[in-house]
Length: 342
Length: 282
Image 1 (cartoon, rainbow over the protein chains, first blue to last red):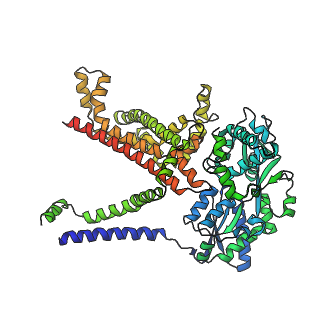
Image 2: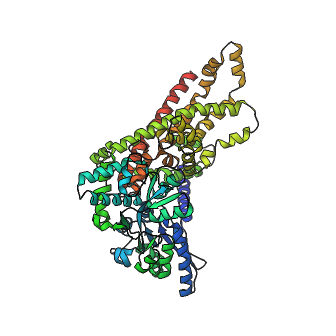
Image 3: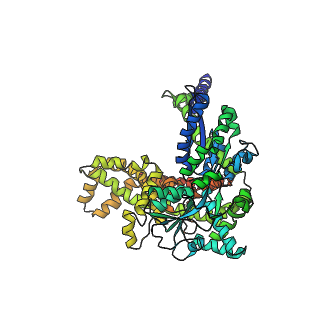
């Protein structure tokens, strides 16, 4: 009997020890050698912009405080990045593709209500829009949304059910149909059904769609973020053309402090400074250089060679905000499912 | 007293408490607790909601695609895996060691890298895809593409299962059969195949299970189109998690069904193997 007992004890002890090892390994310090580490969780296409902005901000921070700061960036699909923060990724600030993803972090209780008004311009220091990228020569003669439904046009756009960027694409097309068919819903759905019938490959995210179009040479037209399209033009100047449609949507990537984490890490002030600094002239110009439309009107005009400022832009408010738009368009059996199954 | 004696007899080899403790702790931390949480999450759905979710056309289709493609890939893997293992065991040739090492590459390579590379090769602008396109066969962005990705990730399971059995099988068996007048085909079916069958079944089961749950390598080559039936189950689960309306319960419910299906299939394979081995031993 005694023997059995000690055996049990030893088994339990080992289990406890194993648990301890796992939990110790899982811990990490936020501060190392007195240098503060600060994490910005962002989405895919901002990688290059934030790499440059972090250098700018680190300099600014050193001037102000005389201290070094280590800025960590994390990139991925906007929705999955939001989920990672909800599940415990220790982000001090989030800079995501759409307000809705930040709202879901708010709903999880990590960000205080009213974050949208915390910074200027709906907390969107830079904006973008949805454009078309076509292969040089524009053989299929694509100039506006209506050209996308022609027979034989092959479209590349990601899946709105798994990619935030793809939702913007869908809504931009919807807005075009709305103006074109004067709110006739049947005609509008028909238009979208034809458009999505021409979609050749539906990747799970915006970067994946760009890879399919650019690297794998699939399709005639990529419906893309303006900043991604301009980046592709810069990398392959002779191979692509950018087409701005007559109507598009103002994509407002939002930024917010993750209050809960910042409080815990003692980085609230830095977080506010980090996001405020995005609105300074230097940072706005940097955003413009990385093909994001600066939200500062005067600086936006400086970049009128880069951006087509004549495009007619609707906003997410025209759809009643993201929550409403999700319910109406992208939930199970909502409009997207309906037109895609046609 | 009697129980203690039994205990004592069982633990002649020292270290039972230590190794069992580690085993139980690791199993719980890494497998049992996470799986239990999947179960807990999916139970938040009511029975009706669960049934409705499973009957959705895209979910049903994803299961058909995943299981169908994984079955096809596992069968292909058994055929080519056996040939591969045969070549590696029975013949001597330069570069044999290298080839043997290469078998494990699909294990080591990040699946996303495999997926992107396969897509590039097999799309109609890629080196291999272009040739097939001339014959009118599309590979990337179809179910054929999914099968190819699953063959890629599944082949090591079959080869590594069969290799040791073939190595232990003395060539004298075949020689004896040959001297008794058996044709080459008869030798394979009557002498070699029964020996490797249990290992082949194991390899088949592992490759099948891996294929059904595969995400990384499949996701790029499949094109994820509901219309073309190229959404796999793991993609539908990710859709639930990545969309603006994160749906943990739905994702967990689909994952649970996937888990049960894989478990049933593995169980069935083990059962067949058990029956077969009893028959040969008697």
